[in-house]
Amino acid sequence: MFEKIRYQLLLYYLAILVSILGTFTVAVRVVFTQSLKKQTVEKLTALGQGAAANVEVEKGKIQVTSDLYSKTLIDGDHALEWFDIQGNVIAKQGKYILKLPLPGKDKVQIQTGKKRVEGVTLPVINSENGQVVGYVRASQSLEEFDENINKLDLGLGGGIVLALVLSSVGGVILTSKAMQPIEESFQRLKQFTADASHELRSPLMAIKSNAAVALKYAEGMRESDAKKFQAIASATNQMTSLTEDLLLLARADQILTPKRDTVNLTEILNNLVQLDQSQAQTKQINLKADLKGSLYLLGDTVQITRLFANLIDNALQYTSVGGSVEVQARQTGAYLYINVKDTGIGIAPEHLQQVFERFWRADQARSYRDGGSGLGLAIAQSIVHNHGGLITVTSQMGVGSCFTVRLPADQPL
Image 1 (tube, rainbow, N blue to C red):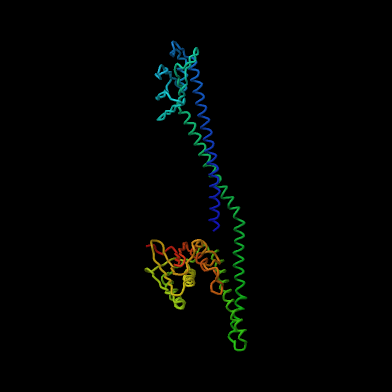
Image 2 (cartoon, rainbow, N blue to C red):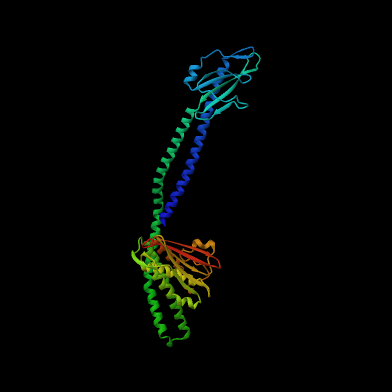
């Protein structure tokens, strides 16, 4: 139980950390990418403005006479293009030329493909009359830009992985420290339950034996006194049953591995069904078994018997007169599947998660005088878990319930 809680706490801690780191990473990447894009556009704009300032305009047309930019452009992965007012190319310099027509409203263009290229287009204005006589487009390879983004991604990804690894180690340590006092308190509570249950056995036996002696010679006492002794004996039996159940649960919580004997499950189930026939007949309940083949498992015979005795008793207790209880068992692969089905009162969907809690009852109005302590299903679940199995329940109000137990078989089919 505590391992599951510790695991859940660690998962919640890591999930929150991943959310924080993810948000931080996305924010850093967006800011860094936008900053790089802005710098690239500013560099191309400055390059284009310089090229536009150095052109000559004769008779309203651009004359490109300077190639001072050529070596700089080739070395810097830049390029320049000059266009007339109709968009026709007049001249171009550099390696990375955009293969795109002049843009409309947007001055920034990006060419996708194997090698990405970004360009910025600026108008060339005649200084004499202020009219647009052409255009200049400065472009640049985005290979360095993409490499920088990839390095950023690798750095951020590696940082997140490293942070998660270190945080996982720290989380394991922190959760262990946080759970330690809770585990110690729970262990003390279990020990108290076991000690108290053990110590209560002796005085309860004394009360039970004295009440039995008094009832044996009831002819010498008043009828009212006899009824009181009967009530004492009945209450003592209830307390004894409760004490034994608590002691069994306390011991079961401390057992990591049960006895590993070969258990004949078919024989146990048949014996239990025969044993409970009288109780079933009293309530006019049809109790039957449907067992497929010889079923064997490794475990503790006493615990396995207690497990299915509790399930059958629970089914008989909550099944009305004229109903039916059926025990089904089969082997599928490496597991045994045992169903205990009844046509009882059923369990509400919102209560299905509570049926295995200690002292929980399907009918909260029942009292201990109806028999049982409310620990039967909790004991059943504890035994199943100690044997490496699983127990589940399905139910429908007014139709009945089905408890399914899955246990590892002795010999897989």
